[in-house]
Length: 261
Image 1: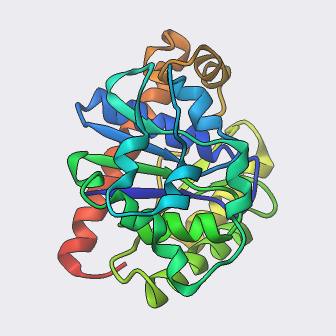
Image 2: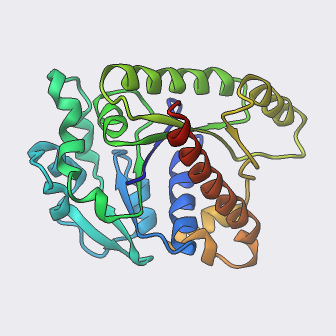
């Protein structure tokens, strides 16, 4: 099982855009994919546009029995090979700290379910609360999403530190899959400067190429379709996401062989 927690400790960097983009790349690659929307804003749920989601991840976390997540899995509008556990605003109430065992609730509920998929994508909220900790404990790898702004380097560092804490305290199999730079405007001098900063600070973790800012991304999300089906305008971004998914998988394999993260 390959379970990727998509993480950012700063809102507005396009974390869900990356989650959905990777889901589209996985679909293009023929991978059976499950998206678990852990963000109370439920943007991944909106983007995947399920027809019927009677149970949400909030219900799953409340129950937390082994394998109970299967009851909440629904088909997305993208096709039978991309499934979803939907989110809702009420999930916010589960972000407060609980007992030491409460960070295992999602992991336990996914046992026997996640293993039936080639890829599980966990779209975490933009904070290091109880929900994100559940996502990291249930994951095998964590992908940090950032943008080319003034706080990008600090935000990426904080997210990586959070991954390291969860790995050392709760989930020893967790590995950092890398850092993805989203919404790059290559014509902007400031953004190129921030990209160079990230390259210098994280030469082995920064996954390239960066994801460019394109209006086709918003059009695809608004239409509830994968970016890979958004027409000519989305083709260039779709190719970047295909490359990123391949590099994340390659890095995961190399980390597994080396036994490091």
